Length: 274
Image (cartoon, rainbow, N blue to C red; front, side):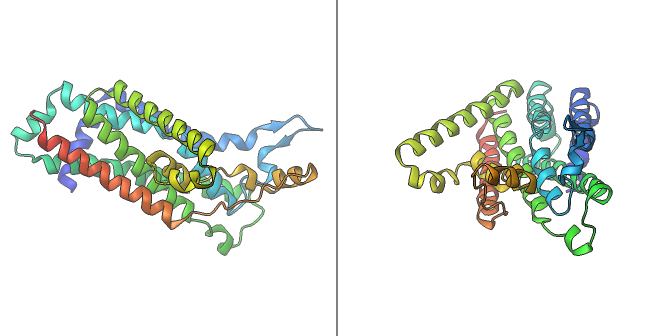
């Protein structure tokens, strides 16, 4: 495992574009802290942090949701890694040097896992610091409740990057691979719209098995969970109550899709004449 990771990190170290994208990604993850200084122009000004968005345990839900929105930067790194393997002929050279196709796929998958692990730890640290500074609740039991959102965040990243890895191997060009991901997202949205139009009662049950929809279901939007938003909605007669929890079913579906993407990547590479 460490030998394979060392090979991948050596390639990333000498790829300027990948280093820029990775740095940008982690800078954006850190920038969630800037939300705390945003002010609403009411009275003398109300900071978002004063509305309870950084309260424990809500902060785990909010920050994992927001952080997942910028995962496309690492997706670009994943697909460009595969594009460079073909354009620079390093894939063929690795196989000549004795690396098997199975080991090659594993090296990419291990890199995906490392990206997801580091991202999850990074979000945990940033969220913990913000919570300790701004949260109204600092009891240990409250601080470390709802950590399942971090687990869901990790699973979501691994699944999403594995999808990107498969598309990168399938298409060989990073721009087209990202385009294919966007096309698939449009297809899922179209199917979802048609299902809700024709079979509304069954639409949600069917859509939960689509890869991107399953990943989205892992961490539901957190904004209507905020007490200030609920209070405002109740004043106008709206009920925003819904299930925000992380479900094992969604984790299982995304995990199955991850295994499918990695297996298909291996089969595709094994059949392809390099």
